[in-house]
Image (cartoon, rainbow, N blue to C red):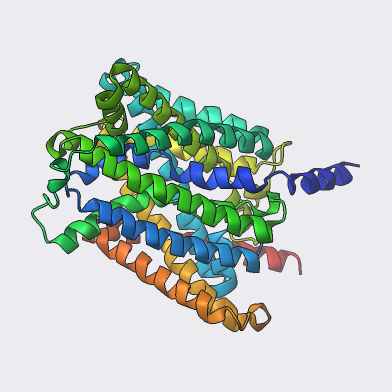
Length: 450
């Protein structure tokens, strides 16, 4: 009876996420903390970073098309991990799963910090008390941890509602702000003191953080209705909508707020709304930013148990990661990830909010890039290993897109700078002994079963 009940529950889960919930997951995971904080960081380069957004948007759409195609070849839970394992084998699959999992919970720590930063708009004491800031950041993490443990469908509904609440005001302020642009403010084209290409590349690395999550629709594939059609549509639709909002809003902010003032801003969108509408506008956008961060955090906590669960099913992660809650959520992966998020927040306890955010997103972005680099090449290898999946009419087109996506991801990696790439490589190397340990365990188990 218990086995039958579990099967019925899993069959029901497969029909829980449709096109709108999945698009909301993609948009919600991308439009999180990044877009609300990045304009101030980009101001140190100048208005040239509008072109950084365009370059990153093109690269993101190329990557989205790669993941959309891969999801039709393997419509199962796992996303980048699954595709890389199928293309390159267990070791590379494990490395991608390991780095992508790190990216998710480290990135969630950054989102929680950004949530706390915008909360200070309404509660100034948060910005002046490290203890209070930690309690707020950890509190929101564990609130959404509980929501996601209850079940995937509840988390999906939360995501749809939160995405609408943050996307509409963000869209409105971006397009209204265009009418208040002062061309003189955009004249600060490159204030970095570096070449235009260096400024463009530096801005592109920062803007990529705001697009991370474009592959979100492919990860919970087992819970998606008609995944072969729904996942590609949600991926490309979500990425395109997000790119449009990012570019328009950046032009509006840089055109309304003088660059020297923008560099000092801790809440660029709230400052933009304050200049246009006055005090009440600042508070409305502050609330939208809080909702945005909350929506992104909910979406990423939903996913932070999915990747290790998929790897655990293939015996590359410990078996505990396959344990499900009554609502069908991978409870161990979600709980362990949230514990690690809390540890990251504790380790950064003595830093101010901006320093915490900058440090955390640098490592998280590079960890995600590793998955993007491998995934863009995986499509080439999959066609060689599985000729039956190759469609002659479209293979040249899809492989061209994959090649361009790889070049973009490689450029973004180089743009990260030597220090970030160094620490990112060290982080990736820690996966090697863990993989060896898992292989040793499998070896012992196989001998015990003889």
